[in-house]
Image (cartoon, rainbow, N blue to C red):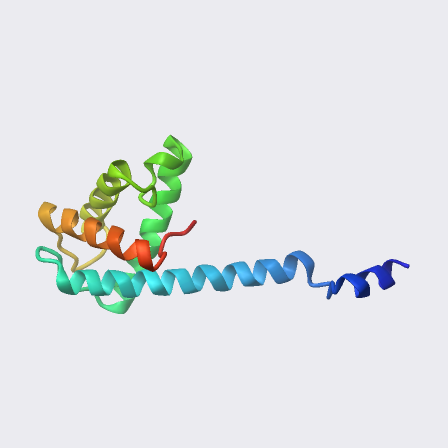
Length: 131
């Protein structure tokens, strides 16, 4: 009877494993999109050195990790993915701090502010955050 119910519902038995695999693929795609966005931002933003794909991918991972840590400590509203002023300021601070972690990356304060604004605008059309 249980096997018949599975067949009737269209359940393939993949269950959590299938969802987990789809989740990982979604995360990988988001990281790649975020890296491409960061590369574009690094090319058009004054005061922001150009990023290679691998440095941009590292930056995307670090932004996700720092954002997760901030959300854990202070709540969702302080996240760089939060819409509004707090998210903008946190994004700018993260962009500025990335230069101390990623080799060959240099960002001025103005460059970090401009990059945060550009990423915010792009994020309205292409969601890049790890939500």
